[in-house]
Image (cartoon, rainbow, N blue to C red; front, side, top):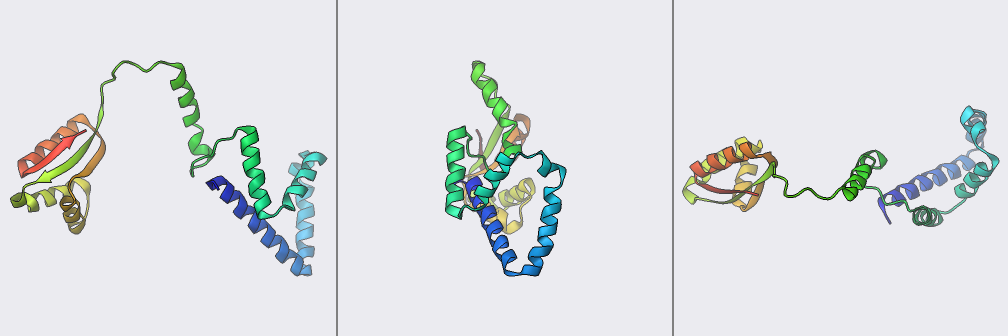
Length: 182
């Protein structure tokens, strides 16, 4: 089950749990009935049609599994893709960019501007110096820096401009470490 389906299922379960607890206490039910009536008398409820109100009533009577099936059926019928955890706001800007890329042919060999810097090896005698430099570069604690260096080969930084990557490589080579730029 995808993340949005699980979310919908949890929401329905909460609604069902709250509605069953509402039935248990009649005094609470009476107070919620008045608030529900106020909500139904609001402008939002007045704008909905009787057809939509009927559908909402039918959906509210579904079980959790039936609700999950409903969500998956609607997704397949309406061709709605599964959204990442970020939801609609995170995915909305990405959709037009994909459409633009499909229309335009890929430009011939763009120059790479961002690089990854990877620590591949280090001299055993220069281990302490390399650990200190990794600590300064990455902002890690001394213990984490030691673990980082000892687990080489390991990616140090990603999406680094070329000049900064070259500075890191030069500094690490002076200390006795082998660093590559991808």
